[in-house]
Amino acid sequence: MASGDEKLISVIPTERQIQFQELEFYAFIHFTVNTFTDKEWGDGNESPDIFNPEKLDAEQWVRNIKAAGMRGLILTCKHHDGFCLWPSKYTDHTVAKSPYKSGNGDVVKEVSKACEKYGIKFGIYLSPWDRNCGLYGSGKAYDDFFINQLTELLINYGEIFSVWFDGACGEGPNGKKQYYDWERYYQKIRELQPNACISVCGPDVRWCGNEAGQTRAAEWSVVPERAKDSEIIAEKSQQEDSEEFRLRRVDARDADLGSREILKGEERLIWYPAEVNTSIRPGWFYHKYEDDKVRPLEELLHIYMNSVGGNATFLLNIPPTREGLLHENDCKRLHEIGEALQTAFANNLMDKAELESNGTGTENIRADNYEAGMSGKSADETFVSVKWPEPICIEYIVIKEDIHFSQRIEKFEVEAKINGVFETVYKGTVVGHKRIVPLDRIATDMIRIRITDSRNEPIISFMGIYGLEEK
Ligand code: FUL
Image (tube, rainbow, N blue to C red; front, top):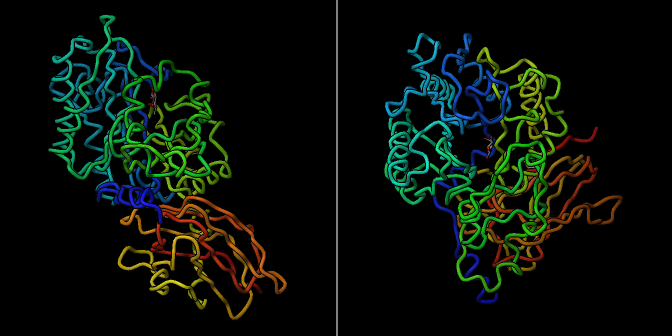
């Protein structure tokens, strides 16, 4: 092993990042005055009078996202228009001035309570860009205001798993631009919610680079430290609100953020795992004219398999209607996703298989936990073979590395015995937290996973093989 590889595997996640990655799939909820004006970005001049989701039922949201298999929810507590879904003491531009529950409502409370009831983690989106606040662009005075609002959210709504900061940064009502004091915001979050991950414009979770649900074939978690600043420095992530932006493809320059070649010569490396974020509809906010544009099940499953199954997490937005409910078309899709995932991963054929490897602790990979894993023989010649007494039909293989020891696997292959001969049926790169290998119902009675290139001997925490017993 080259000394450079030692450096790469010394980069490991924090406990909060590990817990975050375990959530895998969680919901984004975009809801504000835009829901009532049919806009994607409000300008901050909307009257709170228009906000009245008469049938709001946060439990209906949470029940439906849970049915999809999601484990968390991030709510836009304040979007760029500055309207607060909670009765903030620091501005009048809030639910308290709206007709909703005659000014006695607190949507953040209702949603956080519903999450708690159903065992779903709760996260907050608080837009640093506030188009309503007169202090915006004034420097420290605005930062003080922002910290005060952040503090309200961090202390009054239970445990927060994610604080999601986006990079949109335009002019305020006075025409001035604000240069955010990010470090101060981060410190406050660490102080009040030490387990929360700070995402996108933050040090813990990286934006995947597009809002369309496109994924990279090899999504690395160990990347150059400067990747952390790309959203902040540019504050460019979004200068406009357009369909074109939302569908922007991954920039070719960003296609590889963490291969050995890319990391060579980089002084400072960090653990910075990717999150794929996209909406179930074309827009982030609800528009009635998009009721028939809920994305097809196949497309959403494809994103799931390539994000959750490609060493990233998947944040899927579902926007509530003006009534304050998730629309039935979206709910139908959420249930379909849940059912499809349950079916895909219901039958773990490892239970009936014999395992063999040239590493140690092979049997440990049957259990999906971090208690003990299997160590491979060496960086470039580890194998696991799996054999069944009767032929089976494989749809998916799931492989997880124990990321407490960084990500190590760079190349692997799956071979299946078909008509008595081993054939290579899949070639992959990154595994990391989780790789889902789709196999299109291969019929076989023996497979071999060969790890042909790693940053040191691979440490596999789990392997699952899903499909059907051949009849
Ligand atoms: C962007 C925002 O400008 C969009 O409105 C949306 O909230 C998206 C998730 O982040 O930067």
